[in-house]
Amino acid sequence: MRILVTGSAGFVGAALTERLLARGDEVLGFDNHNDYYDPALKEARVARFANHPNYTHRRADLADGAAVDEAFEGFRPERVANLAAQAGVRYSLTNPHAYVQSNLVGFVNILEACRQHEVGHLVYASSSSVYGANRKLPFAVEDSVDHPVSLYAATKKSNELMAHTYSHLFGLPTTGLRFFTVYGPWGRPDMSPFLFAKRILAGEPIDVFNHGQHSRDFTYIDDIVEGVIHALDRPAAPDPSYDPVAPNPGTSSAPYRVYNIGNDQPVELLHFIDLLEKHLGHTVEKRLLPMQPGDVPDTWADVSALRRDVGYAPSTSVEVGVERFAKWYREFYGV
Image (tube, rainbow, N blue to C red; front, side, top):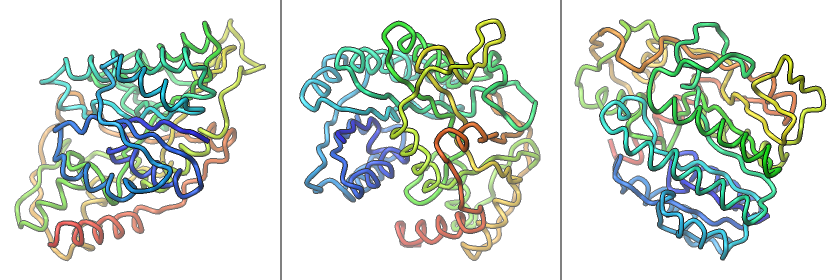
């Protein structure tokens, strides 16, 4: 198939692109290579597949509607994986306009282009952050997500609402995937595995918020990519059992789906740090601090709907995943 991947220089986007090319798809990558974190890492990710005969790369911004339209017009994608976004909960507290441009304006541009060019299926990245102030565990797609605690979460919830509108009005099949704490080789330097690894190897103390009481549904990158591909290959369809009197937030009478995509195995943050120390060969001082604004104490993905509908089956334990990440980190940074 011809698949357009936005955010193809990003963590998940690059890993997905590599897998799609390996199975024979033709991919157009779309990424603005912004400097939210080190652009050199983005360049290194793209270098893994930049010369593949079935790959084309376009450097442009999702908020540039003309650039988005040109990409669709020239490539004519059959599927779209929209993984580009302004990421990060804490960054949204100080740079809210970046989230509006990328996650709202950019997403409208993608939806419109998908509609105009009759794309067969749009799969887009949502986030576990949409559960916000919800404390019921595990988080299920049937749960309310009406109490976000960061602007980033609010934009991701908005994406789901916007997607449903296009599915309802125009019959565009859309699937939203709520990612749960993705980690692994080639990951994002602003996320905790990178931050911890850098400080552990430098012999510097690390800040552990919520006094170390956090737990996260850490999900290894290979499992995430497998789930995204399974979703791409199965366009959303109307739910024949959808009841408008008692609606299920994860389905619709329109061709619309929302799923959790996680490991379904929450891990205490302190245990994750212990594993990093073990595989990096150093111990570290831990400064236990209060919880930060916009953060949540625990995440845990109920992935039963994704298992049922697309055969999703995460298989990488945190012990294996951390070991692979630590090995890659040492090799990539030469430490």
